[in-house]
Length: 449
View 1: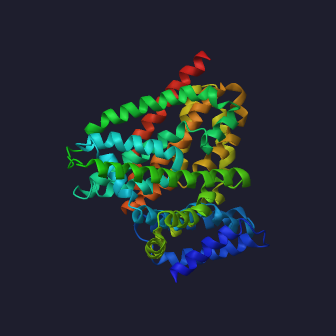
View 2: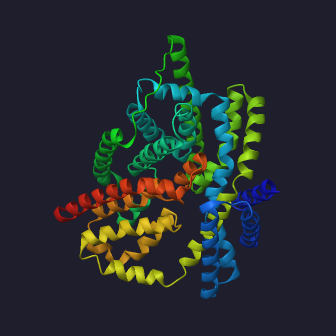
View 3: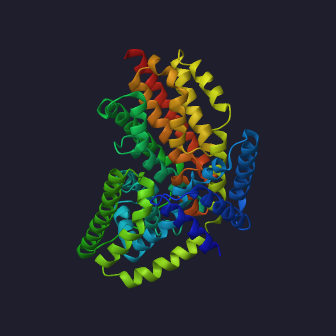
């Protein structure tokens, strides 16, 4: 029953992006409430309690604000792209396994990785590069790749490595990507050109990367790994497999990027559309269609039935976020920021705090930055655009590594079966230092520009 109801919600959400149907928000909202009710009996731990609080508070705010039923039901679609992504991801994961890409990528990462510190550097580099092309699907590829390497280590060491290595590398690569929506949004708010900001943001990211890799020797115990001993033929096979993986990723990203730019659909939703078709097409290319189909369908069924935690928490969080945006809190925030724009350092610090707080209560960073653009609009003429763009980019993308509601942290938490809040807290000190360092640089630029 769960598989059928979850599938119906996801497929209707996708269908309504193409079909203009009267009452579609009510249909999705009613179905979302049925899903929440069904998931109530299967959600566990902090997922359950978080979802219960979000749903209760969201409903209370709806009643207090005397909003329409259409506004209430529409709020449940806020997080649907994220849930749809989780729903479709098993098709890509299965292809990685059937095509044995995970084994060969693991061998590539392990070459020259004598201990966990060497592995940290190599994995950080691979994740940073792949993140530019594969976006969020990078995590599925690399986590499955590293599983075999960490099979004899404790779960805590493995979890902290995935959290601190992969999430940080991904967040830092996005900060200087010209295709990242948060970067584009920050440039639009400040009216700046990418080339004016790139040298500064790239320098900040480079310093932070060097610091994190240098500190990796202090973060993990001395764990050694068996050295990969490959013949010339096996090494050649590894290279061919990696080349094939890059072709697969290039095909997926190209399809998503071209379609997203042509249709205007956001990147995440377009990625949801192409994961399954591209995966099935590639299974034909590598002549594994039958094996892949059987394996992928089985994995998809098992994963989908196990998504009660995510459906319960994310649908409830969507309701809470949308209802909160209708309250007088917006006016209070605008007054607070306007009062600080003459004290630039504190203004930048307030932006950093704003993203940390909003990320931990369920706001998606894109929602937060759009809301913030309206809040700080009166202060924009008083501030230098380049430093402000720098602060907006870093603070809006930092939640990628610590926000329990961000798709990257949720994905890693789901894979490791660890609560996203715990993963977020592991990265919060580093993210706070990253934000503070950026604010100091931006403040110095504000003084001299």
